[in-house]
Length: 151
Image (cartoon, rainbow, N blue to C red; front, side):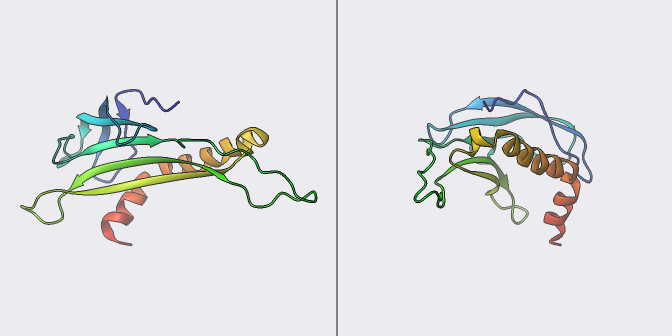
């Protein structure tokens, strides 16, 4: 179950020192999500802002409303499977031009698992997620610099 401990230790970013995010659970946009808002910042992250209605800063984990089940093989061959899709969505108010109102920017991680793989190949599902989140964590600053610099 998605239940991050507060404060969340942020990934490394150029110009930030030991960033942390105090989070509080808030209503999610839909019943199949669990959402948290950033209510306090820690470390050095000059210019970052906490959540406000007109300047959101949230993280939301969304699960399928109904889980798909594995298909049935036809002539001994299993065709394309239905998928169970999970999303981790970060939202933040981002100021596009100085002096203007924030507009919402997003970061979405989508996890799409063929129905049945969560039980038939659970270790490989976990290995996939371990690789992706480990690489993202290790490269947090590099990803941030690429997005900010456009390269």
